[in-house]
Image (cartoon, rainbow, N blue to C red):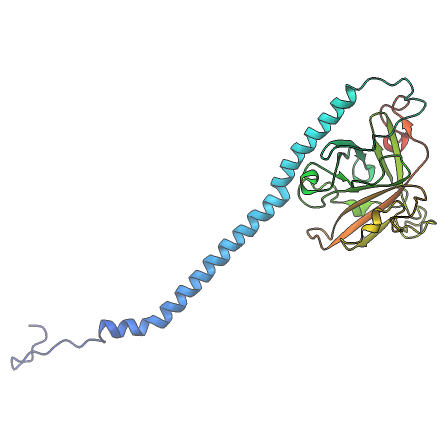
Length: 276
């Protein structure tokens, strides 16, 4: 029989150790493998969460913002279409009212440099709720065409990304503000001949990067004392900088170029917008 000696004596079969000893031998390796699996699963989960957040910020918020922007634009156009016709508009286009409720449309912003059909409805206010609808007009800054500084903020990445490529603007580029009955053409400051954004005779840069606390960029005269009177009619666009960060602000300054153009005279837009 197995395990018996020729003389009839039986012996026990040798073993490699007790179960408790085997557990002790395996325990360090098993522990490290468990820890490694746990860390790996945590990293994979964290990576998926980050990926989903990026997709949400870059694409989902854009879809929601586009719907809100379309609603604001449709409502503003409908309001304008329903306004009584002013027989004096052709002679003297009127600027928007001095006070507009938060979240309500102020006008349309057109920037040909960002695309031939680039247009966004601008709402009153720069809080999170307003900027989810589109570019927002800084409360207390000038209205289109008025002396002072029309301040407009917009998201750079996510929530519609209206100012994603704001850094592409060059000296002399037109930026057109459309109101119910007029077009106002502003041109980016700087030297159009050389493309130098810092060489405007006024000393105001066409483009600058500042900290979020530098609010003088939307003073009546950009970068001047907020209490000082305006030296002209300006437009300032602000957004986050660099892309995917809110650490700084990218700022573009422009100045009103000539008199407003009445919609009665140019229903499709001024030459600066149409290229005529």
